[in-house]
Image (cartoon, rainbow, N blue to C red; front, side, top):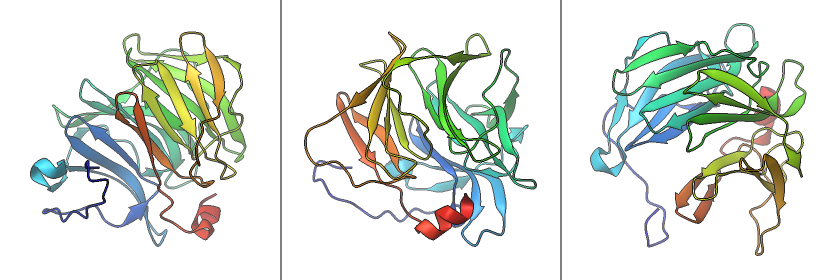
Length: 257
């Protein structure tokens, strides 16, 4: 977003991803990465990977990566590791609608997929979980929906240095059962923020890893309207912005659940 506080439509060259929803999108270094999802008509799920070069080259590119790619899926989670890797966790499997808990990463330098087999107990299979990468090489996984479509409120992290899963038991004011919300990491504060989500609420909480606790936030001003399937990202140091992604009708959301 420019200093003019205005939206601008972009017209990239190249071959864009097919029309889809329930995919993931992460910004890594200088490119946007789009992975998997479902066609708008709900007929097919895919596991293709595209990148967009931003305004620097304004071009879409299909990435024909080598290695062990995640299976076609929807409602999975993605997080960007600044060392040049995009991690994909869980989601809803293509053929059986099983809730997944596998972990893969895409290596941008090698243009390859890799299956990760960490030690420890992974989060149970789930969809619509929240994923974010912190400054110490941890990927946090919070909430989601399990195989019986129960909403979850557990918190786990993957330690990329130790290649291991860990579950946390935070104190404080927990967000409660949660899925479909916006999440981002504040490096300056060592905090993970979650906004809105299931129930289309306007709640905001943060997790402070220093004291392993959740805190409810009550900002001044007028909040965004209640919503789910929203997205959030850090905008500038000490400034944050919430980007809304309610692109599909409530009927489609109900159909997917």
